[in-house]
Image (cartoon, rainbow, N blue to C red; front, side, top):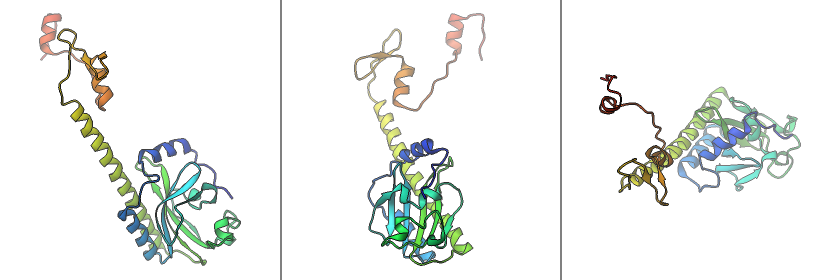
Length: 230
């Protein structure tokens, strides 16, 4: 059975895109988290999986050779429908998965447990999951460990995003550190294409700064002599 789309699917996909992680190379931190999840839960397969529009893509994997599969085959696509760990003790007895090719085919999936990867603004990007080829259960302690490791995955993704945004911000600062042609009368600034812009527009195009307008005491005295500012 195909998983229904989350009600916030469009915004969720936008959130996933902001992390710029899809189709990126292998990274030891994510590989180590997947390996640790498999070790703690005593499962031969563990993955860090992200749910894209039409596929599930594996950022890290232990015990699997594939890097992606269609979304309609994904167990993790069901996991992102909730904030809780999803546990499937025997997929052959679960109506959602009993006819899934991963269950009926050579992969022989029976047990699955996945903790959703939840962003600070509550979007579920995918899951940290463990898989076994035999039916089994998951202890409360293992479930808690899986949740903790899923939070660690999100910490890594947040650090990656923050570092990228910081680098972009520093680049913007450097862009503004050179010589700016500015009109000595109206104070408009000439951009790299030769167009003149108000300084607020010029800075706003290159940084996240926003302007508010006020009246300094010097100008108030000249233009509004009846107003006294302190």
